[in-house]
Amino acid sequence: MTKVDDIRPGPAHVAIIMDGNGRWATMRGRPRLFGHHAGAKRVREIVEACPDLGVKYLTIFGFSTENWRRTQIEVAGLMSLFRRYIQKETRALKANNVRVRFIGDRPGLDPKLQQLMDDLEDATRDCDGTNLTIALNYGGRDEVARATRLLAEDVAAGKLKPEDIDVETLPRYLDTRVLPDPDLVIRTSGEARISNFLLWQSAYSEYEFIDTLWPDFSPDVFAGLIAGYAGRDRRFGGVKV
Image 1 (cartoon, one colour):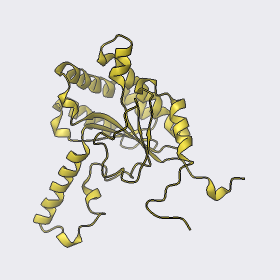
Image 2 (cartoon, rainbow, N blue to C red):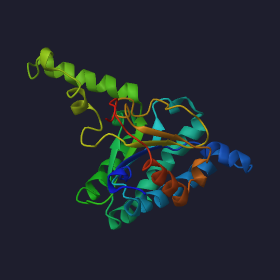
Image 3 (cartoon, rainbow, N blue to C red):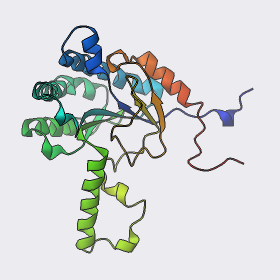
C-alpha cells in the first residue's frame, strides 16, 4: 500500500532539448526546415499541456551558440521561423496566461528579432500561469562566462567582496536568476548528451533521454514522463535514514 508520504509531486520546472526536427524531415524526404516548422507547432501543444500536468515552468532550447555552424540557409530559415513564431503566437500565449522570457546572448541576434523578443516579454509580463522560457543563442558555458564577467565588474566596483562569493552568488548573475532550477530535463531523438544546456542549473536535475523525435513528442508522451518522474527518489547527495 502506498503511503501519502511516499507520493512525490511532479516536476514544477521541466527543461527540454528539442532534438530531431531535421531527421524527422529527412525521413519524410523533406528539407530540414520542414521539420523545424513541424517542431514549432509541437511547442504550442506542449505549452498548453503544462497546466494540467502541474508544470509551472517550461524551458525550451530553441537555438544554441553552436548552431551558427549550420548552413547559412538553415540558420536564416530558423531566424525567420523565430520571428514568425513570435508574431503568430503572441495573442495565443497571452490568452493562455503564459509568461514568456528569453535567455541567451541577445545582442548576438538580429535587432528586429531582439525587438520582437522584447515586445513578447512585455506583452506577457502580467501573465501568471505557465512560465515559458525560450533559450535563443544560448550556451551554458557562454552564460557562465557572461555571469562571471558581470560578477567581476561588481567586485572591481566595490559592490561585492571576493571573500563573500559562494555557490549562492553566481546564480544571481545567470540568465535564469528569476527561475528555479529545473527538476526534470528531457532530450528527444535518442541522443544522450546535454549539449551545453543549463549546465549550472541542472546539477541535480533528473534526466530523460528518449528516442522520440521532437515533432512526434505529443502531450501524451510528455504526460508519461511527468508520471515517471514522480517515482524517482531525489536525494541531492544525501541518504535517507
